[in-house]
Image (cartoon, rainbow over all chains, first blue to last red; front, side, top):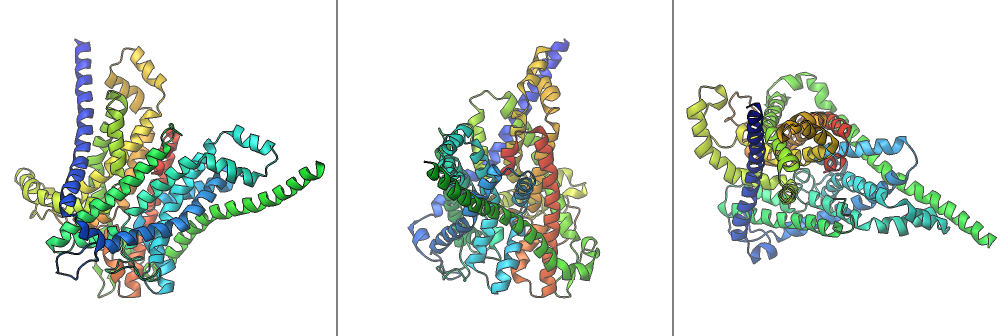
Length: 280
Length: 316
């Protein structure tokens, strides 16, 4: 009798956990379905090759925003990747105790800072001195978001490189820096690329830190010291505007953005697969 | 032979020295950025701190024309929307994580985990888009009238159904932090040693009893960390909330009423701040948000680290 009650409770609880998994997955699937449904019906060739039309006129596209997002990602990568990878090597290789611990902790802190706060930082450091919104400020904000992610992944992957490999190279009399650049980093390459793709997927969709740094622009980019369009900014502006045609384009933009983000996550997965099956 | 070895050692030593300096400098830049962030924000917020003092936190008048700023409605909106989100997301998220790690047959877990991981990468603005055009109309036409009719005697569910408002913000935040809570909880649960489970099963416990007594209890502090990480996320979440909360700096008992959060106030007004004091007040709001999220995240990390193994999920 008692056993039957316990088995009953067991069954009920297992059912409840299964239901919560279902309830959680459902809205997420709904979001994807709506996105594909609404986005695909609004997507056409114009979207990819035309500038936005003046307010109130239907048609046009977001070509400038797509290019702008790619430029911003490129800028952020130029600043964030070398620093992140070299810093990650330092965290993995240093024999110090204190400084690496501090940096590691600060990287995790920085990673938890809301992106809008990083936007404020970029505003005070880049926009105020230059007295204008600029692509450079946007790229700087995104680089700050990207840095801790790249740093920590690189560290972790450099640590995974077998010591025997490093020792073999050192035993040949090769200087340590060369061992790191020519043996350790190439061995960890696949994993580091994964980290890079993950960080790019993260910054590609960032909107809040661009609001008052990159600012947005309805034309092609005009140099790094001018405001620049970005896909997430344009989606936001179009979504809260009162025009149906803009809403349609916002859905199309969101679909394009998601495809960009998912494909970089996917590349990350494919690159990793087989080489470091234990590491995500 | 000897000279060769010697020369290699010398160039190696020199090159190594330079290389070490280089990588150390790269790592130190992170330190500079974080310190710079703190210093710059405090300095920029200082005019507002001096002008309003503690009353900034406890008054609710936000009036850019008269240059009187009190952040209480924003703090209230931020806390209420995040708490609402966690009330929904925590039981469901941990339940789902238990299902994935303890209950589900082995073939079902990887695809669902993959889906959840993908969804954690969906940007905030896309959730916001969905919130404006799908969630808010649904709330306005279906959910809020029904809630008002059945539970309308509670002040929580009174007032006209706008769709956008605190309820919509809480729901969209819940949807956004759930994948995150599941991912961290699942890693925490997977880090529980199997010996714990086997011991309980060997004593004749059912699977639920094993989970409750041997797994959840063991993972308690890690799960607490997962919840706090979710909280840190939702406190600072900007775009989706800005798009559905209604953006009105008022304190209202009803969840149907529009509100405002700290992050969405900054997002909406920063680029349009006309005076220095206005800008400074907005930066002080940002500073507050920064301090709170750093505390929440630091606590969360300590808790998750205490269980161990979940460091990877934390980094996302």
